[in-house]
Image (cartoon, rainbow, N blue to C red; front, side, top):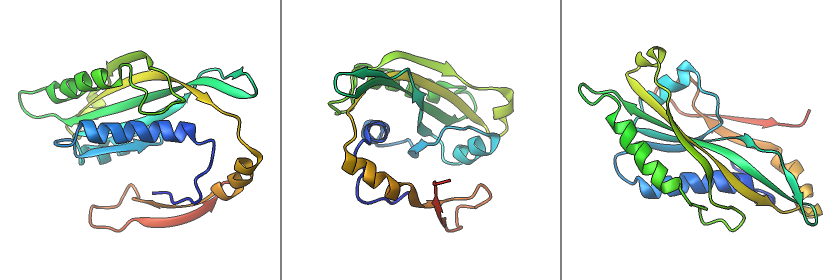
Length: 194
């Protein structure tokens, strides 16, 4: 997990994604093993990794729509979000666990602003079955619930821009793809400056 202090202003996109994760943890307190954020690229290895921790709800921020300037350099855009829904396939239930979680998510997402004043009700909420024969190896079913969340981004202050340099150096703990459950997380420090 990344550790950063002090909190950078202008973090509304991060706050929105994290608020969705927090709301899912409250809404699904029992039975869902994994509820977390993901940087967004699914590979066969990541599906296999998550299949060991299913059922899982994985929140992904994909990008924004065209940003529009509103007033004095405030920006209005929509953040494209999704929740990947993963469940193990057991004999006889096919995709029932995924469909039950998808149904709950559709109700939770509708009209939800996640407790953030800068966010408006979601638009274009959809669910799609992502199952393919290629994903059948780990015995997993995969769905995605996607939506666009309108958000207002206030102009950043000079002080917030000054903090940005510190924010571009971070420390992360991560589990390598080859790590087993008993192996410790590795720690890396890197700079995002060119």
